[in-house]
Length: 336
Image 1 (cartoon, rainbow, N blue to C red):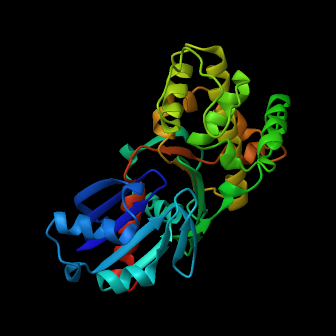
Image 2: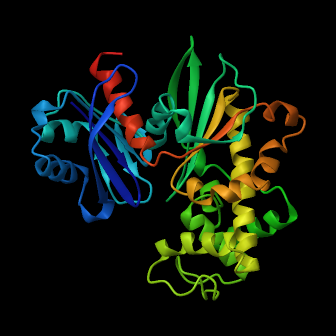
């Protein structure tokens, strides 16, 4: 039996899987509010106890964590946790334990996704010997590479979401100037994430407030009790065209998403495809299909014709990161 985890800034998924030749098969999955627990170890213990599974029955456990991982130690970017592989192994006594970046885990999942778990934005011409890339906006922004080594994808982690935001249009330059005034430095994640969409909303509404809440909210969004409620409210107001400034905010978000996806396509030479994951993309799929995303993705002169041939797909499976961690666990359990 395999244990996998997708540890995010807002929620965490833990899953039990059985090894299968092509793709691990899910037995049971549990969802947790990340900050409801003091750390990953007690969350794992709670999950296994509720399923009456002894740790000794776990052949391998792999956990994708939303943060930079060095020597299998991760500090979560948006959660005050430190996740250490050695600590998990000592406390739970699994036969094999691994900690990897969450986008690296998602990249492992990409290698086994079926066609009906993807929505193609650009079919392109996939190159059988090409690399691939993954980009995912959610609580934060993650990126990962899939290097094609002798016909097999080898995922590699990245912290590209924390790279500098590159404005491309006069309006984006205005946005950059305003966010620089507030934050000092503007990463891509400051726009491409749930909180990033709120930043763009505040810019289009001229409503920057103290902390993470806007100074005022438009009628289309309505009142909320906490900041995490804002991104879906803003997206809904934009897609239903209830507020012109919400429409502009989502348009900017989608265009920046396309541009950054094109950037990682170039950096990775991702001729086998770019996969757009995370919690936001499936929820705004009509907006991603509407034009600005691919226009920005392709606006890469003198490489515009090149990126126009690269396949681009949205990952529809919400458990793709958890599945990817299970793929990694299966890989290490057989010594691959």
